[in-house]
Image (cartoon, rainbow, N blue to C red; front, side, top):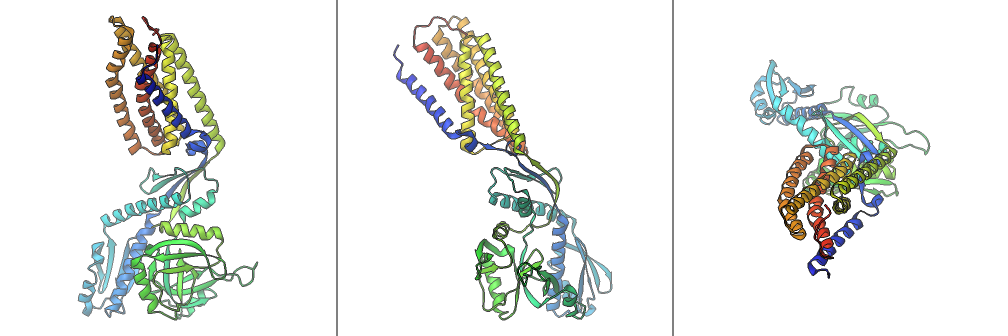
Length: 522
């Protein structure tokens, strides 16, 4: 019998879809992404030291209040930080109490004030502000780490909240230079541009003696990253006395990139956003002839002289290697961490373990297919071959779709891969049993096959939609391994509807189109 045009079109569709799927994942070693448990890499659990962020906020608030009071003429007032979320104010003149209270309009939004004596007050951060700042610190750290990891070029990294409120899970598949990855992740990269008051000094004690041993509260002594006077010799330490309040910080940056300085040495160039440029332009314009300290994580990297007004661009120079300049640019672009990080757990997964898992998964899938073949042939005779071909195409489409969508194959994903075989068997069993019922009712072979597929379609669709809803919840609320399973399950469900309904039916129609059939081996 001549093959109908409709049947020929269906076969061409199947062949085309399978060819596209094979093209999408072949060769698998290059196109199928493997997760940490299969490819190897590093598994890290970090704790965000939220106390650092609270202390920074407290210190900043106390310093701003002291500066505001000094501007208002209250020069004798002192502030002292007494805890991560508390500070005190002393020596407030009774005659200027009204001025003092007017300066507290912004402070008392976040801090509760209590009197500890004449002219002395204690400030304690409000409990809800404390809780909100801890939560926002962890969220900001999570986003910053994610940006840094993405710029590392790691395929399918996992950065997520861990069990405790202040813990973060980081998984980096395929990473071999673990030390560099850890350094980039945990580097605070807090850039501050501050005015130099005095320096450099050979040691911290000499720097303090320059102020009579009593450093003013608006001045801080910072170490400098000194260069060796002669190549091969250790660098001499240096210290600078700088203003405590920064003119601009890394939060005002727009971009950062590795460059070369005028001596052809690695450096880091940066540019400001509109607000930062305005602040920096006004600052440099009013301090021409003075030194500007480029401070990174509490260490002076360089202290050039301000020769003219600078608006948008700047550069960090020093004894950087090319790799250090590139890493520093990366961390500056991704933003400063709001707090320091502590590594609680580190596990390195070797690729040999992943290779063993892949072999075990392939063996399990092959064994499952073999048992499915034996069962289907024993129970449904020649129709079982139809089911086997349908399941095989389903697995090919699953691999192709995962490769095309860029999904990552994980060990739980292999479990979802094997589960797809079971779903394919289940769908074909439903169809075959319905066809047998139609044959038992006295219908002809072609009519029974058509009725079997038509009446089972809604049942298959209903079960797959229910499973898709479950997979969606697993993906939304699950962690990395659970998401890997949910991803494979979702793609397997979608491809199974196509193969069980369209491919299997086309194969029945192809077999029945070649001759006059009065019975069906099922």
